[in-house]
Amino acid sequence: MGANTSTNQVVNCAMVYGTAMGIFWILKFMLVPFIFSVPFTSLCFLGLTVAVPFLGYFFARQYRNRYCPDGCVGFMQAWMFCLLMYAFAALLASVAHYVFFQYVDGGAMVATYRELLDELQRTAPEMEEMVKQYRQAADLIAGMTPIDLTIQLILNNVFYGMLLALPTAFIVSLKRPAQYNQ
Image 1 (cartoon, rainbow, N blue to C red):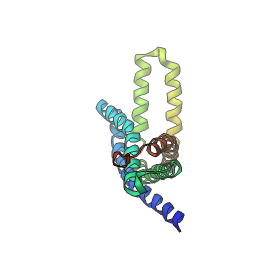
Image 2: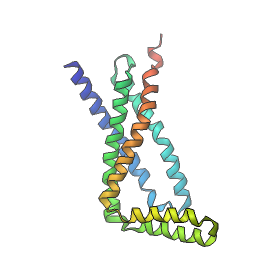
Image 3: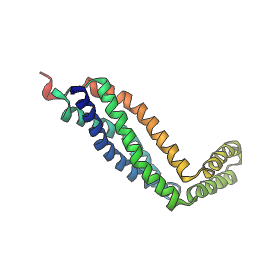
Image 4: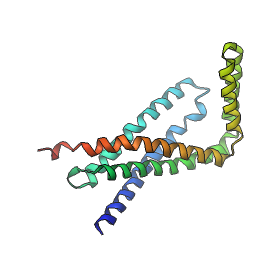
């Protein structure tokens, strides 16, 4: 019963913190439609993206300090928590992604991106080969359905979450809160 209770606690806590991370990702995603038209939003989006691993560490540390005996957590438990937290966040964010691509965007982002590529090709003809590659990527994205885009974003978020979970779990499992170091 102890292992099952611990597993349930990890999953439940990962859901709670994953919901908070997912809300953060949704708020961050709300900047995406403005990235091409308002340059400051791309800087904000980049800053918020860089903040994701720090927020993940903060949540993992909170989990360790609140729910683990004596503020100690093993690597596997911390890794499972982080992995599940990012997976739950990806699932929640995917709802916003789908709604955006299905009902809001209507291909406007890809059209804006293509306009920027046209402008780049006019102003910098020496970059023609690079523009051609970016145009192929835009064509690929334009051919995807909203559900295809959403699934791709879920897979990307889970993959990057798996990568972030490893160092985060390692660091969280090494550190003990100051009140326990005596």
